[in-house]
Image (cartoon, rainbow, N blue to C red; front, side):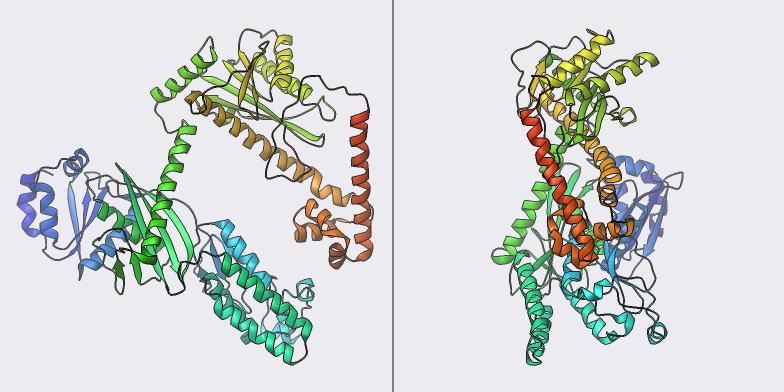
Length: 639
């Protein structure tokens, strides 16, 4: 639409507040904006010269304009944000945040259950949240269940079913985690008190919950129920410790939202701290992409509207670094000069800067976001640093994993043009090697990989990284020589502790500069093969080790094994729990069987260890280097 065409119909535009929508010739929505006076705002697009090329492009594409009149500028602001969120027009600010956030749901049913969900259904249930972290939600639910007795079963606890005695109390009742509403041992009023305490905990308001338990403890003591009073006392201590661990900003401060912004050309980062009852209960940072000449004030106002809507914020105060045009009924904007609110704002600014730095570091380690020239520049640098005969546009990396010699597996990742080629990733179940022998394992999988490529007539990589140092590099080279591929690709060993590179026959290792682009790419490839290999290894162990170990104990059936794993989560925790804790769950006789099994396994492990020290050592003389997986147990290693 030209300026002349607009002038012919400008008189039709209302002067009221409202929102305007620009469409192109294909009737695609290009832009949604708000205005105190629609005619004045829209006319400005066709009557002034824009310095921004993007704004000029927008005006050139406008073929049709629609208007919606509202009662006030505030209503226009809210409607604008709603439409942007719904349609995401091309030229509006884009909130680059596509996460599905978790909720804690209080299910609409007799004696409502409390659990985590990502699906918000219009079923009459009460949804608390959303929350920014699933781990945080799980921690909250575990904390709630350990302190507030609520049912976890899926029984239909209608008044009729309870009156007809259709159900019996389960183990949770005997453990004190449930008050037995299924048999009528708990009234709906008492259960509702527990739900009210749950809501207080989720809002960070623990004082009413603590006071409730103190009253119950005093009542129990007066009735000489000292055992019950002791349990309540422990719960009070647990709540007080949890309260102390929370981020308390000020005992006087109630509820507020804190926002800060960091601008980086067309990108902006907005941090959000949600304060409730003096505690920070949520923190989240989003990335916004601007398309026109939006100011920091406009971007921040947009981010605030979107985040407060997403997280259902009830705060009547918003703390900001500078004034903005933001109108919401009953909401006060505060620009602090000092005190607790200023410290909160500084904390938010620290978080938004950290978020930006982390994104920058990830971009450095990954080349996916770079253009073709940038990726090639890194590959040319790697060729120069390693003195390779060709540019390493095709790189492959191998890593081994095993669990005390059981379930040995290997992984290979492939990078093409500096980015992962996931369709070429491969897992290998080791076939010919028995026990712990990472050197022979590496020879087997390298031989299998490149024999397959030769048979298929596929291209070979220019660079192969063996994650394991000199020993495994030597055996990998043997496989290459047996295939007659020597000289057709370069193999290097990567020592895991010092990030040194070894070439075949070299006495000295090569250490690349710590911040060099070449080493960053090698780290990225190494981390990817670790991730890919460990994921496969854990899956295999969980399928073939943990559960079978319990079921293979004579006298322990599948149901008992399931019951133990459901309670303790892993065999390692069952072993650490001890016979007494196991007996409380499955009885003393079966607990003795399991304890005897673990004791025998420990003794066998010691004997195997001694045999390994005093017996004949068939492993190669070269030192074996490995890396530990910090998330595994003390008896697990990845090499």
